[in-house]
Length: 286
Image (cartoon, rainbow, N blue to C red):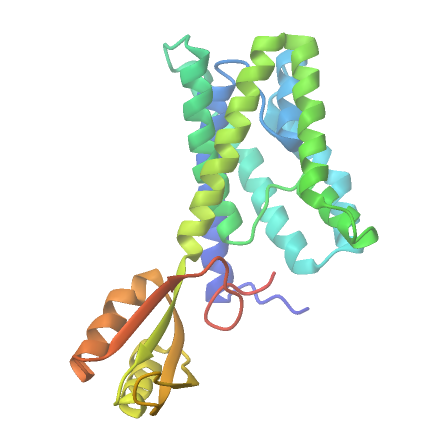
């Protein structure tokens, strides 16, 4: 696949991946490290090295990811490898640059630190995931396993890896540290999921109107959204109708409703949530 580095979409993705990685590094350095807690994946292993051997986690992440990127270049999609490389470099360098803030807070409440660390990490890594990036590590391992054993559940593999990290935390740093780490991981996952859902949220809209030709043309021209005709029949008077079906991002929903009412004030509109949309104009496949 030919990757065009000057493509606007790539540049926007890279900027948000870098921003998300920077926010994630603040969550790790300002909150988790201050409480000597761990994160998931390779970052968790890197933090163990930092706590035991005083080697900054950012350097350890770069070292651990190096052989994984060699495998990724050989075995996986070039675009996935590029996006993961950008995310890993941005996150590692951000961890190194923000390391001085690890003792800036005068807070000794580990519950508060794990809560806020989880929220900040979730926001940061959510931005990375929304723009199809990753911070390398076990994301690459998961993709390699998935390619070889397509029937394996990647979610369960990731859960198993994080469970091992938490067990190591309990053995080395004590049970309270492991329990706080579990809380931080859960909150990170919860916030990350909601960030991803928020950015990708779209609505499925059904419109019944007598001016379907005019309205469908306006939706396609003004909103640049596709429209599909579904054919229905009224139960009362048995007349056939063209039902307009379209999917729009949440940000365009007010504009669509104004457009419909401006054409036909008596139009019937039904709006439904959608869980995930792929395709032209929405979330492309990586």
